[in-house]
Amino acid sequence: PTRRSSDLSRVPEVFVTLTVLSLTLLTGCSVIQGFLGDGGIEAVAQADQLLVDGDIQGSIDAYGAALAENPENVDAAIGVAYGAWLEGDYARVDSVLAGAEPFAPERVGELQLRRSMALIASGSVDEGLELAQSSGQPAGAVMAAEYLLADGEREEAMPLLESASSAGGGVGAAASGYLELLKDEDPSVQGLAENYALWAIGERGVAVASVEDVVLSMPDEGDRKAEELLLWAGRAASEREILVASNLLEAVTFPPPGQAWRVRATRAILDCAEGAEDEYAACREGFAELDGLAPADGLIHARATAASLIEDSAVAVEILGPHKSVPGAMVAHQAGESAAAQTLAPAGMVSDFLAKR
Image 1 (spheres, rainbow, N blue to C red):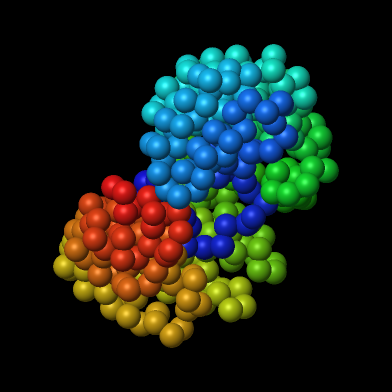
Image 2 (image 1 turned 90 degrees about the vertical axis):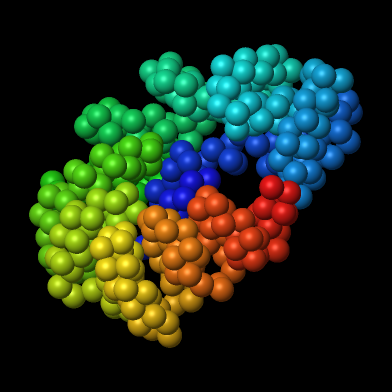
């Protein structure tokens, strides 16, 4: 995790990013079932439990031991690959997963999808995207389509999105969301698909730097423009694109129903990002005024986003307040405030992880 929190605004669930997908795709935790034979089942289950308990290094070591004893256990290989991913050893991720393919013909597609992510992360983007498409996995199609959209290749991306749109869950919803944008009659709405894709593949600075003209040129009818203005203002703030965020925020003439608090919260976030100029007075005042006006969950995420932008770690912890949340705990952790991080962490995996640091 980084100090950057999730968006203040309600990011549409249809847009599933590689960052969100990576944990599900790479860890053995979500796929501890359907083993081939009996070898290593108990060992992998124990490694999985260590991961759930927050003992990441312990789980990685256990996956390695399980694979050494049972080289045909695909889930042990996935666990080892996950450890290599955390270490940034993407070549090992690829080699371990490739070595597991002969032992699970029916799972080659999902293994190839994981391998494609490692190749992309290592810089071999073209090779990774080719493998993602050949995997036959809907997530691979969406992944490839996002890179095509980021390069402005809309026509090439459309068939991939069409093929994935019937998939269940977030992947199918993501494909359908992109198609909805691309098929809109207004060119500015169509162009927004490229910004969403840039954000999804991790080119967040580019996404927010290029989104201002696109959103401002959208038609004013209905709430769609205001929703996009708020979404991208929050994203721009999280990327320290203060001028872009301010311009987008000022263009919100009438917030969508029930969303006026988001305008004030985004303004408070911007005040926090620039807070050193007035010793964070406007930052403190902005969040004090939001208490009781904003939904509890929304305010927690707004505070976490603001705190991630504050250079003074003590002020960051002050803005987080006493509210327990995973985003707040991780922001405090990344700011070097270990005691505050443990206090803010809800009971569960993150709390267990922080306790072992």
